[in-house]
Every structure is written in structure tokens, then in C-alpha cells.
Image 1: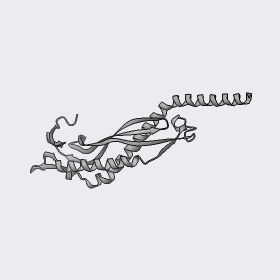
Image 2 (image 1 turned 180 degrees about the vertical axis):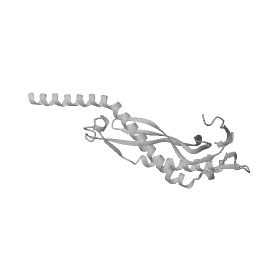
Image 3 (image 1 turned 120 degrees about the horizontal axis):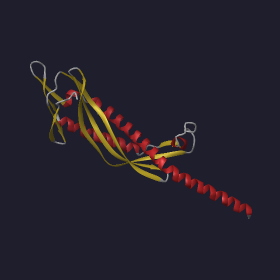
Image 4 (image 1 turned 135 degrees about the horizontal axis):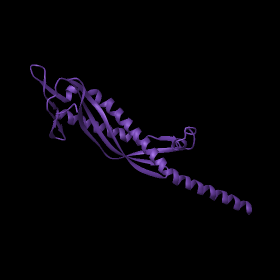
Length: 214
């Protein structure tokens, strides 16, 4: 009888210890899982865009530049049809990529969560699952940056946003993955015109480029 009580006490003590450790480690595990999910999804998005979209896009495909007789840039305008096509194709590619993540199993040892360099490769594995939530948002954007004397770099990139549900043992959370993937750029030599027309979501938006070097 005494032996049974002793074993029961050990079992209860172990169970209480496990519960205490779980409650204390759960926020750390969730934070680590969120970081792992965000890193995994971001890498997958970049790879999908660079391999399936960016390889077929050149700067002159989407930006039309007009010059005068002295070869000075006088006007720049984005090709709205090609911009919309790229945006649609990128949305489909990212959605397909996010769906493949749902079948991907990510594991990391519990010691890695604790931040210990000595025991980072040890401990029971924590299994991470990612479930895409909702639709993928893709927008085409750009920026200008002075890169030298009388030179300006124009970069066109995709702004991508998607929500992912992160599931770990006994817990789950939602992560918003945001990424910017460049698809084309060019160095413009000489003065950039004050007006650059970029069409976004079917509406003309005028971007003023004064004080570009600031």
C-alpha cells in the first residue's frame, strides 16, 4: 500500500512539473514557432516569385521611358496591362506556394527553444504545422534612390502579405507574413523627370520626384 502511494506521489509530482514547465514554456515555444513559420513562408514566397515571375520580367517590359533628342529622360510611365498581369500571376504563385506549406512538417528540438547553445540540438522534437488563412495580397510598388553623381536606381518590387495559422502541441496562433520581392530595376543616368506615372489598382497615381537626393 505504501509503495502504491509512493508511486502515485511520484506520478502526480511529475505531472505537476510537466504542467508547470508547459505553462512557462508555452509563450517561448509559440514565439519561436512564429519566427520559424515566418522565416519558412518568406523563403518559400521569395523562391516562388524569383523562379516563376521575376525570370520573365525585364525593366523595359513594365516601364516605358521617353527621351528627347539629347537623350534626356523626359517621361516615365508604367505599363498598366503588364503590371496587372504580373500581379495576378504572382498572387496565384504565392497561393500555390502557401498551400504546399500546409503539407510541410517542420520540427525543431526543445533545447533550441530554450536558447541554450549546449543543448540546442537535444530534447524532444516540437512539431510545427502551418495552415494558410484567407487570400494572398500582392501589390506592385517601386522606389527611386540616388546611387551616385547624376545616377538614380529605380527598383520595382512586389509587396506580398498573407496570414498563416501556426499549430504546435497544445497551442496555435496566427502569423502575418509580409515580404518584398524585387522583380526589376535599372540605373537611370541623368536627371529624372519630375513626374512619374504609376498605375495602381486601375487608377492613375502621380508620383513627384523632387528632392530625390534627400
